[in-house]
Length: 200
Image: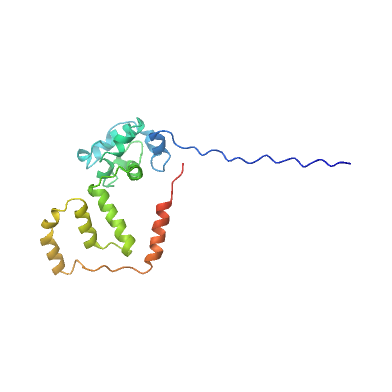
């Protein structure tokens, strides 16, 4: 008797990965960004922020702008770069929103989109610290500070000269770096961390 041919198994299809379509969905999809859905726009964060008067947009307004999908305006602003991570806004928020975490999310998106200030002080300081740690395994303050001022306000280096000599005389400013052991392993960790991508 003829045997029946085995039934072909249906090919397994992978569900298409959902990609955020709007700016607010992009922020919501990253851990730390989803909590802004709870915001009631009371303004407590803006009133508590130490640097709100220096920001292009207060924390309250940033949340409103994210909800309104004003991506370019938000990421090009200086607001998240003036956040000093004091967490006062998060502590006082009646909806328990971690606004500081949202600011970190926006910093990351600004870097990805190429909206980081070329002469922004906060972003350049962070960049200098990462470069120094990646090179030596720890921060080499002299090189980091010199690079920081060259990138932001080179003329200020002249005014820092007396302080530099004073620190040098007291032995508080080493002129040579002291690299740690295992720098190659540390670089691999930093590189792997940089390649990580948070997926919704």
